[in-house]
Amino acid sequence: NAGVMQNPRHLVRRRGQEARLRCSPMKGHSHVYWYRQLPEEGLKFMVYLQKENIIDESGMPKERFSAEFPKEGPSILRIQQVVRGDSAAYFCASSRDRAPPSEQYFGPGTRLTVT
Amino acid sequence: DAKTTQPNSMESNEEEPVHLPCNHSTISGTDYIHWYRQLPSQGPEYVIHGLTSNVNNRMASLAIAEDRKSSTLILHRATLRDAAVYYCILRGLDNYGQNFVFGPGTRLSVLP
Image (cartoon, each protein chain N blue to C red):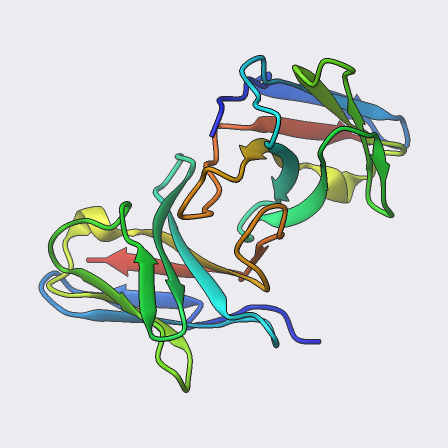
């Protein structure tokens, strides 16, 4: 059973470009979470999605960031007009259920570097 | 979710047991105690979770105090591969978003 897959693993963008990060959840999982980890900091929740729905985006910056989880295909985290402060590791997690204690399984992350 | 308190760092010798403490004095009755770990340059990895009773799995054991205000993650024989940041997280039924709130965790160093 393949784990959570994220691609690309490393992404370099110049300031002002767009970054698209992809996450394929584990088989049978319909809940996806995105987290961001800035250098030398802890993981911070960004957004929680179910198929075709954003359930909680309380951790998403108000501008330039968006996320989707279409009926078919991976979840996408999109960052428009990237700035140096967006450089971080972005982790996706998935779970089978919503209610506790359902475990979340994390992908290897996408390391975004903005030059 | 209620707050947890963990030591910033701990050291252990290889092949010895490790006890990682976590205080959660404001835990509610419906909060589950989860432990995750993050190895260098990797995503967090699920370790174990429990509610009231002690739990064992192939990775670790979780000992929960009778009043549930603290818990201890036990690695029975530390290996070099266990060097990681360990996160103790509470997650309850009142968390609408069902996301995990990660604190700074405990950085475990394992000495050969």
